[in-house]
Image 1 (tube, rainbow, N blue to C red):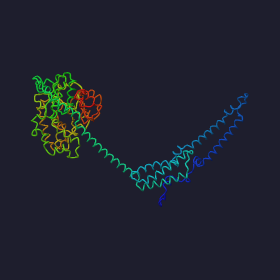
Image 2: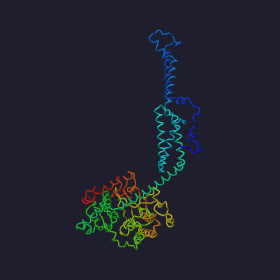
Image 3: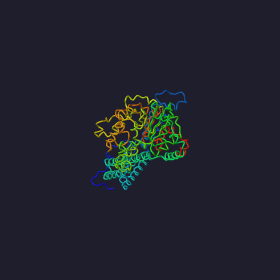
Image 4: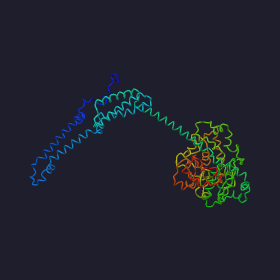
Length: 572
């Protein structure tokens, strides 16, 4: 290659000419041909041997004459101080000879040709990577050829005792330096390389974010889909209900005593609102199996029109240790209409329906907030419990994605200190405070609520219905729902309006009563063991394939997969 006029040789800039340095003894020794070095070494070794023989044949003048003929020869030679000194000198010389053939020492020298070759090879490999990114294949080929050439020079040097052939090495170094100059002309310098790497990092981050969004979307879709086993069970239970008059009589012809127990405030009343038959069955089964007095338990279940008959058939076919189960459908609550319930009024709006059901609304809104289930009346029925059960004084509200592990009777004797609700607080982390759920940039929220106020969880809540009615919590809930018609106070869901409606009216319970997170995160095993209620909040429900396997066992313990109907619908 021809160097441009006026350009200094990079190899010259990097390393002075050899004739400008004062060569060391080792340098001069290494520059001699290999045959010359071997010949000199042999001559020196022969001279040393002759010297040793001469010393061995001469007696030591300082030592007395020996009378023992057997010990007069070799013993004098070995014990001679002069001989020992000569041996030390010879060993040192041999170590120097061996050391001069050490390739590692040669490379560690800052001024060695080997070191320069190694440095150039390392830098060339970096330029090859950058050139490949720029699709400069010709330059990649030239660099690769020179890298192989320099590696070959080093390999021959290692095989020949550590000496690099000066002429070959200096020519290779000059040729590589010229390619490095070309690389600078191609802008393959450090600054440009860093910028390119930054661009690649940003591109990877964008791809990662896109994949995370896809994962969230598909996870949400999987969580919303009805498993075929649950669909099968609903169909078969519907058939059982309509072909069996005996099952229908169990619910239609209840004795006056059972009817009276539904309103008896000395019993333990639980309410669950759900359209998932198996999930509700697990809630009821786990509660009664872990109760000290299951005969005092009354479950109030509310479902929808589709699941009303199959749910009645299921609970008529199974016994839960004498617990009473009442089942109603939300469609029978005619007083829950658009003129009274703000959520139902919002559902009549075409824009709201388009946003939440067609999926053609604001694409900037996360998919988890676009789930139509959050507008389901079953999800908001929890705010109307005093009106659904006007004769009850205290109830425990349970979500359908929980498992009960301990007796819950003590919840009904907890002193709420004049508050409406008893709940487990979730403010151990900052993202469970009010500012996580509410829009505190809105003046209405900012004026009435502390952004660092502690959040709490639905799923297991003790409700004093007498205090609820006295403090008109349902009216407060309506007020905030009406103010959020444009979704500027919060996005969606039942927890944000619950935080507002029960603000200042919540008594904190011991965290052991309600353990959260089994549907989206890892929970401490000791916390799970001590928990009274395990909550699978999140998308990874235990009845779904995407549920976390390590926590499914707690839920499966309360599902009787030997039941004939489950055998037909669930392949295990």
